[in-house]
Amino acid sequence: MASPERCPLCRQTFFCGRGHVYSRKHQRQLKMALERLLPQVEAARKAIRAAQVERFVPEHERRCWCLCCGCEVRKHLSHGNVTVLHGGLLEHLASPEHKKATNRFWWENKPESQMKEKFLISPKDYARFKKAMIKGLNSYEEKEDKVIKEMAAQIREVEQSRQEVVHSALEPQAVPDQEEGSSASGSWNGTNSQVASVSQQPLYLDLPPAPELDWMGTGQPLTFIGHQDIPGVGNIHSGATPPWMVHEEHSCGNQQIGPSYEEFLKEKEKQKLKKLPAGRVGANFDHSSSTSAGWLPSFGRVWNNGRRWQSRDQFKTEAAATNSHNGRKRKKAGLLINQ
Image (tube, rainbow, N blue to C red):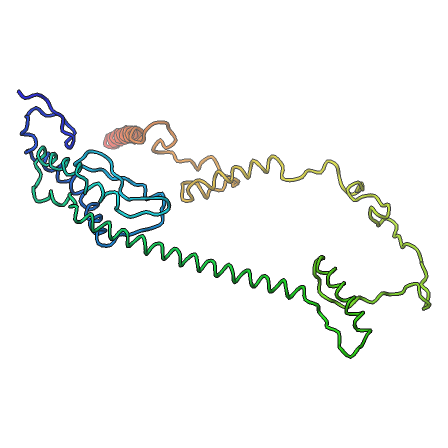
């Protein structure tokens, strides 16, 4: 009997030696494992001709499992804020360590020999990928520089428009005429001093001053007639009692607020009945109606405890006994008539 060995693909221990790798189960598990890795390798091969360079995001730190080497490998190649897609996987597939591990894996597990070249990258192809990666990095830097220049132009435009707004707000509103002579120069200096003082204060619209009403002028005098206090009506500013402290005579201290306890119980019962099905037996029964004592059924033992078939059998037994008793009475009556 062969010594026990552990198969990592089938995840079981076998005792048939090297014959296990030729079994159907092992070949099926091996094919499924290679098919899971093959799409990632094919996507990395497409990046040899045109390397894709993107801005780094946390998703670029993903790793993939190399079935031949039995270890995790970086899928992308990142440096700083730049990521080269599929760069880490291509670097691993082109390494001599991966080539040795692939040869050993094919010797131990006996997969199809045609698939071996699909999981290897030649040094020539890796050199082409390096050239494509350099071109991709250069084009990425050009795009970034273009974006930075556009952002700088936008910032300059915004700053220029802001300076224009501030400049227009600080300019004098009125310019004196040259025909005013020497008096205009003095007023111009005064205007400049006022503009300088206004520039240090918040800006307001130049509205015409509101006319001041001269109540104490020489016109018709006004007579003060005093405060017109209405008895019983007032506010707290005139010395009246606040409304929350006024005692209302018509209000009753024992007046109940809200429904009574009996009404609450009735409403609670109504809410319980609403949850029951509307088509149930007795849903529309009027409990307030008056009924006599003869409305209950007198057959079938409807109101007895127990199963229905028991009351049915009991009713049939009693009915049969009643019928036999009536039959005997009829026979006796017939005999007496014949005699």
